[in-house]
Length: 451
Image (cartoon, rainbow, N blue to C red):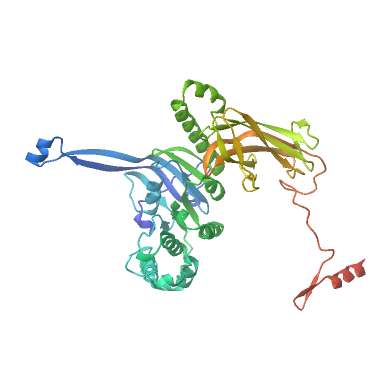
C-alpha cells in the first residue's frame, strides 16, 4: 500500500530535540466515525398502506482523539477488548480508511495483512493470485517473479498452488496471503491477528520471520488478543478502550495494566451476580480470575527435612505447598504453576497434567498439593508465583503473581543467569577436525605437549 494513499502531515518534534525521522508512524489526534442508518416502519398500518419507512441515523465513534508514535524498527502492539478500535486503527495505518479528523503520517510504504484472503480471487489459482495480490500491493511483475519461488515454498501448500483458491482451507489461504505480504521485506508491516488461524508449525514460522524482519529494521504494528505474544513480540503497546487511549508504554507494563483492568471488571461482574454469602466468602479473592468454584488460599514453603521456612534455598531440596478450598465437587483438576521475574519473564511453568497427576476436590473441603524441587535450581533473588486450577480449558481459579518467592544462596553461585542448568559434560580437550571427523586424541597430545 503506497504511503501517499494515507493522509499525511508533518510529524511534530519530540521533546529534547528528537526529530520526526525517528518515527515510522505518527498518529496525531485521530478520530474515526461511521454513520449508521436503520430504515424501519413504525406501525403495521404504515407498512401496509404507505409502504414508507422512517429513517434512523446515528454516528458510531470507533476512535476518539487517539495519538501515538511508533519508532522505526520496533514492534508496536495494539491491545484491548473486542470493539475497542484496534482493527479500525490498523486500517487507518494501512490507508484502507481515512480518519474523520486528525492525521496519520507514515515514513515509507506500508504492507498490510488485515483480512483473510483479502485481494484473492476464488476462481484464480494460487499462483495467479500471487501476481494479482502482488500487483495490488504495488509490486512490479519483475519483483513478483523474483520472489514467487520463495512465496510458494514459505506458504507450503504443495500442488494446491495451481488449484483455484476457492478450494483452499482458511489456513492455506492465510499462509499464502502472509507469504505474499512479506515476500519483499517491507519497511512497515501491519498485521491483524489472522495468522492465528494457521497451524502451530506455520504460526512459529510466521513469528520467527517477523522477528527476523524486526531485526533487519522493519517496523511492525500488530493487533493481538494473545497477551503473552504481545509481551514477547512487542517493544511498546497502546491499550485502546472504546476507541480511546487508556495507556501507552512498554509492553510488559501496558499488558499488565490491561490484565489488571480485565480482572477488576470480571470481579465486579462476578460480585454483582453473587449472593451475600458468596460475596463474603470471596472478599479475599478480588484479584483472582476464574469461575471461583475453588480458590487458592495460600502457599507454604518446606525444606528438605519438612520444616516450614520463609524462603527457598538454591541447590537444596524444597517443597511448595499450594492450599486450595473447593466450593463445589470438582474432578480431574490440574494445577499449573508459573515462576515469574519482576520484569514479567516466566522462567518455568510446571503443570500437574503434564506430569500425569489430576486432583479431585470435594465441596467445602480444604486441601493442598505439593510441588517438590530437588534441588532448587533457581538463583538467589525474588520471583512471583502464579497458580492456576483448571480443567479442560475451564479456569476455576487463577492467582496471577500474588505470591512472592524469595530465593537465598545455599552455595556460591559461579554461573550467571536465573537458574542452574543440569550439569553437562565437557570434552576433555580441544578437538582438531580432520577428514570430517573430530580427533580428540590428537588434541589431547597437543595439549600435553604445550604443558
